[in-house]
Length: 295
Ligand code: GUN
Image (cartoon, protein in one colour):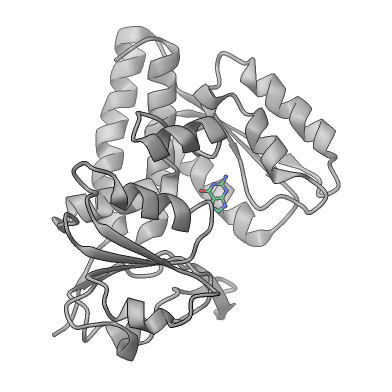
């Protein structure tokens, strides 16, 4: 058996086409252009490339996008002031502060400072709380993208044994919560593994759907999964540099040893990554519509 490849590129393309039409309609019918600002502090190469991709996608969809790049030694107070300026800017509907932030800045304080109505990352505690309760809110982009990928690929989650590897606030905790929700795309039996799990592979071998977001290149091997598993690989690890200068990327799953056992798998690159950016666009459009009172 060779796994079906779940293409994030193809799925993201379909969703972006839908969003492009919606953005154009919003402009035509309501004179409203969704606006996004991305704020990057410092020069981490991975963060720089993510932020550039977010802005490029926004432009391609007709979303107004501003990019703020700040020096690594920017103070927390300065950053909070900038966030506040955008909270009060009516042309901006979505504010994204790229993580991680430099160590001298308190991440929680910055995320709490973003207006929850503009929190298109879904990281503000108000949105995290609403998500937990199953209330409408901005869903964090990577978990939201995983839900869409599973749904649009026709993968049944109801009753499935879902095993999540990783417990970050950005991916592990929210995807575990979303898969648990009592609604379509949820209803799974969820297990979360992490660095202190006593026997992680006992759990990974039980998974019908395995979601890996641990940040360790190729950590899940073929003998640690069962036949027919669906694998969502969230890892983006830079494991070298090609002659062209481009980074060589690897997922958290050892693709070559699992591909013969899995029923379906997301590749790296081209799996979850494009979905994350697309969900940010979807959230920005939603934020603009909500700000204008449009359903
Ligand atoms: N860093 C890694 N993933 C993300 C994300 O989804 N949003 C933000 N703001 N920073 C990130």
